[in-house]
Length: 459
Image (cartoon, rainbow, N blue to C red; front, top):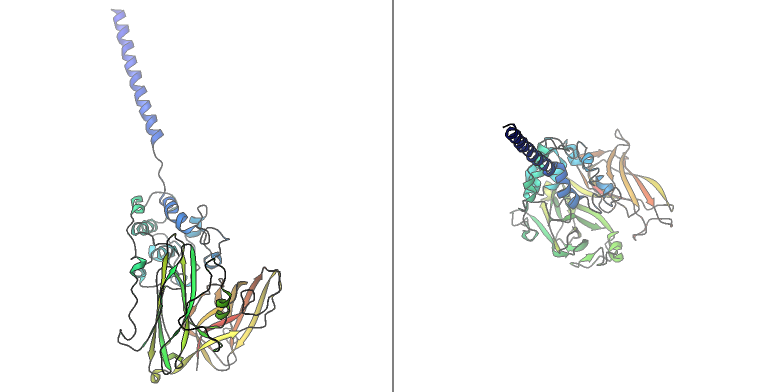
């Protein structure tokens, strides 16, 4: 009997030990196969920022050509710190109280606005170029993922947005092929003119910038009080130019590329561009500028202007550019002040080789004026362009700054800068001459320039 009891105890112990072994194995297997949580920011980095933003030439490193303009690196090791709680460089966004990413506030986060190409979601304001430039817009799901992450506090750790949104491929904007040119002024029932740059190809992995001179079509002088521009997607800028010297103008309606197909500079086009005087435009894809009430830009009879579109294509497919310009006219009787063009040109340049040089030049007005717009122009060695007020109560105040010589900022002043006779502007330009040759003023890309452009009117 004792033997039987002993055998039963051994059997019971074996069963219990086996059960513990099974439980232990299941627990171990459960622990071994458990998948760690991936944070929403890490997913956003891997699925959006790294493949579409932190690319060479854009936001990959401080050595990117565009870094001086945006100051933002989105490489994985620094992206979060460069986004969260950081004041943007973009002046309009900064003025509206935005941060690059503001916790719980997607509509006050520049990142959200830049990724959302539909400007209607923020009242039609345009905070610079939509991103990713030269590529396709993010999908509806991707943009919603970013929005939810920000609205959840934009944490670096933790899963706060539905990862399935990143798989949503619904286009957030209509196809580039669905471009519909805006109505002409006359179709709108008002007076004016419409100019066009017809649809053209932008080759894969190429940026295309071109010029074409168009006749406005005015048989008599006209007064322009509003300029409206429309571009296809991936437009970097659209600028209108007059010509300083009216002799030997480029042929009408002839496309002139700034770059050859091998990406080398077209020297003839570059020299022609050195004869330009800024008339309007900028880097917004679709924009409108209205001159102050009672002012207008006078265009002489039979006037022509150079249209200058610029597009990026970072895809493997052919994209297209196309631009439309509406010039709205007003009756002469309604014009109190004629807007004039600022063309302050410093031709006495002496820039030593292999060093940085800062050149300062003062320009003054012979009458009381009000400045409504400013932009700048240098060639490739121009590293920084600053414009200050000269004289008066605001003497020395910086009113303009640009760090990108190829794509200078255009600043329009809602409140014009009022200057008295004898007061003016000072250009403070930093040149970084990395060549072995001394530089002087000249028309080629191996020479330099130093010009303040803009609009003003006299009082």
